[in-house]
Length: 240
View 1: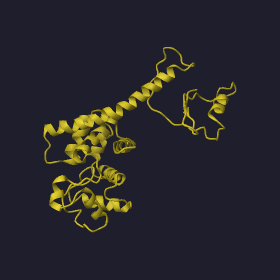
View 2: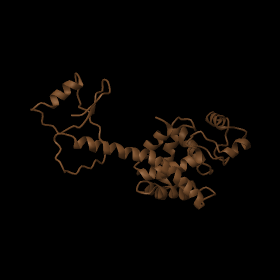
View 3: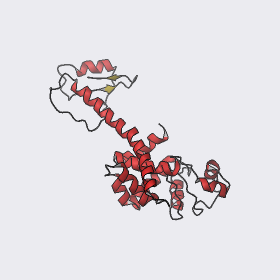
View 4: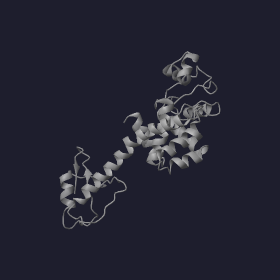
């Protein structure tokens, strides 16, 4: 799983809508390119360090001015002396590197939950990528340039993630609907709308997928219908 996918799945697991997750990701991309060890470019020259060296020296405690140097860092480019020390303390409490993606995502949610509740509420209810993106830009990131051009650009980044991940999920649900309507038990004309997918384990060892299907299809079997499952032995997908 790549960095984009990890961030998308994390944000969705926090209850954000597709538009909300995409709007936030667009801003994170604009800030850091989604690179958790990213040191603000203009500070590389000022500090005489690039991303990897800065991260390593902070981790080792050799560079001790992380909280007050006002150099943007991480996926959200944390900058302010009120926020960077808290990032460092949180990451240390997890026993992780300051450049660790999961640790930064955890801190991101800590900030949203404790200090930016209005932004989090927007991200969990947004139906518009632009609305979610603007909320993050104006209330959470708050860069010096908050012009309409910047708003549009960040929303465009967010839309790219929406198109890539949200619509992929819609296509999956449409495929499931198609499979369901082909089931022999389907009544023609019945409206089917799939809202999600749920994984189901049979709960006991099976000698083979074929043996399970024979048992499932027996006249004495009275459980509800299963439309498909994956054989844990070889990954084959079956429809029943």
